[in-house]
Picture 1 (cartoon, helix red, strand yellow):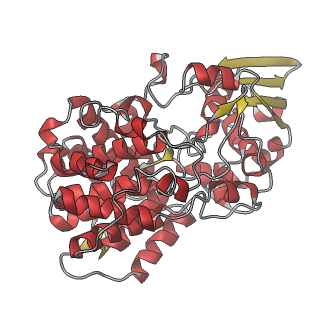
Picture 2: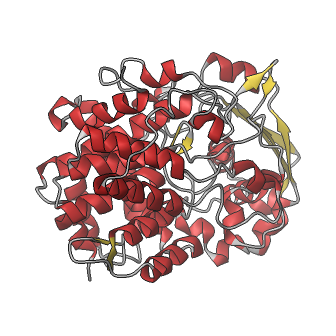
Length: 473
């Protein structure tokens, strides 16, 4: 009898680039453009800089086992490059999100580093990106989720995080290296046993929040690459861990729900991740996207100046009334990625979205800090109802009191992904512009344009290393 791990391994090994629907290929390109762009922006953030420094600690790597760090062009060990690139992509919290949450910073860097080392083609990398996101999305939806509801209220799990991305990360490495389905199955089993703990809630409620955030992307990239190498060297893994609801992976990471049928439904025939893939237009936790959309529209349409604002009230998602999101004391730049008060204050000041939102000048701006004290929050009364009607719902209401008037705006679906509102979709051109903004001050305009051209036509690239060589100075 074939286990779920074996079926996922076969899906990885047997899916050819030629088998991918055009929409899947395009989404894989979009994810690479967005993620590599976020990595460039991440060089401006301490989290990204620390990741780059730690990659040097891991060593230069043996010949044939090296890869390039995004933006710096430094060649280090493949494991070190994957660690650094994961941390860079996630540094600003500007990276794409997909259920179970953050996926791209965990699964793209290992595949990218392994592809460079193996001199794999762009077609192979695109297949790996698609497979790793599809697998992670399927596994994540078979377990407890951050936006679970119960009795009409938000009911997030007591244990949560993004460690389940490790399976997709290991699968992506196996794909670009051309490993057999048996070796990939062993790698997936090993990866599950090496999976980091789910640390989201511990981190969310302990203030001041730690700069490592909800889980180091680098830790998952390292474990995934190790799992793949160990399988190649002859280790075997637990190939039953995604079948066993009592002692298997779901129990290991504290999930109270285990529905493997969601993980395996029409595997290889239907791609679930595309309609759920979301791209961020603000370098901030996704929970603030809808409120920022509405607030920015109100202040721009009515030309409201920060000095005129007497107060702002925002109706938000049901699970965010926790220290992480309610925090108003900024001790470190990473905290502004989650502070709702700081994010809305920056939005009210009409700072163009980009890495500048987390520059010292913006983070510590006296006007921005002062306006934070005039912002209050309340859970949207229809949050659970609307969420259960459509999973992309993020209902919000914003009231801005200024000039003796209350300006009001409401929205159900934020910009970023596919929803019943076609205006929320982020186009390829918008992702390219986001890439350009993130590349400013890091790459020349000529190099930026060359990399974008290569990424948007990656299926024509014979060796991924040629793309990464464009970062070398």
